[in-house]
Image (tube, rainbow, N blue to C red; front, side):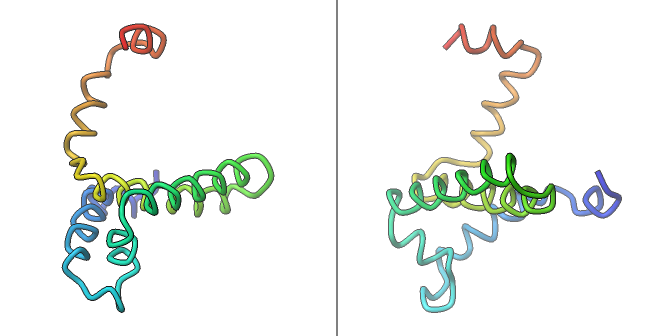
Length: 110
């Protein structure tokens, strides 16, 4: 982790707040607003496209390309969550509840 990233605070929380604010922006000036206006199906489709691009970058491109695609995946995941009214904080709580469990034990408990 670079010193710059540590000084940015919770960049994902900042992005969540930007996405929430963009719901009020003009659709002619905000890509986020256009995605949200198109609804959960479009947001999910775009997330899937970006996830596929990240997989391709992971196996066939440079680490920098994967980094860029991962950023796109995170952004589109947050937009998809917003389109369905799923709070970012709830996702963090779900992750926190899984801390300390092995991945295998967590999967078996589902």
